[in-house]
Length: 261
Image (cartoon, rainbow, N blue to C red; front, side, top):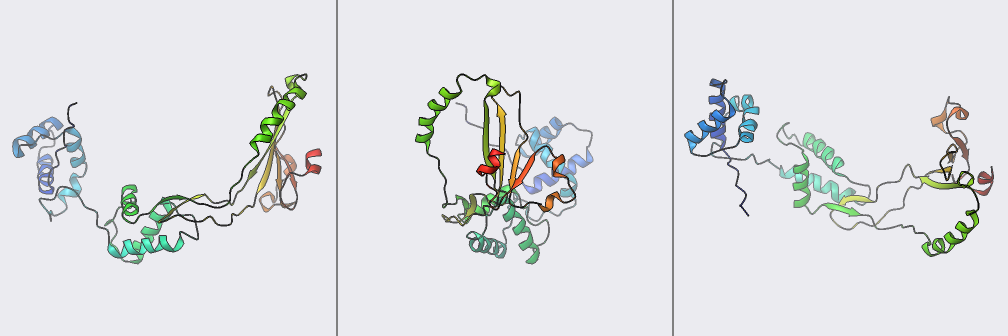
């Protein structure tokens, strides 16, 4: 197997000199720039390197080279910013769900409060991954409430059910399925420095019942079951004109009387 060729990286000074040369010789092709670099410094760069350097030509020409021998830009992590962001994680990891987007926005806010000059830090995904790695922050699954179904009972009931509907045509066999929409339920994963215990979950919900026949020739309008008789979202809206049927009870559950209706 042929070893992968290590990419050639020019120093800040070399990149600046290349930009000056390109600015004075704008009619040259990328290959001619590559040949010039090889003749000038004895290294052969690829086209992508030339493209990336010249894309920032104006910025490089207007900026003084302070570290001529430096090859890569090392982003500065202000110690006070790192400490403040870590303290934020340690404080709130037990109280709320943390995500990459939340940490980036919080870092920007902290940087502004700490007087970090704009454009000094780029709050990119790679910047965040480096911060999380250095501080032992990883995605953790919350451990707490769990739900399960009796699979054994289901396996025993299926053959009996199949025998009952075997003599019916497909258009007369209907299946109704109920699901819950927990619109305030938080994710069960969060960013943390250690294993986090689950919290009491917000189980405010809507129940949704969907029904159709086996050959898909007839589909009933969805049945939505909420807690309130007149939800605020339906203000000035005639519910009867919507492609659904809305019912309510104190727990937003499917109960016998609603099923029979």
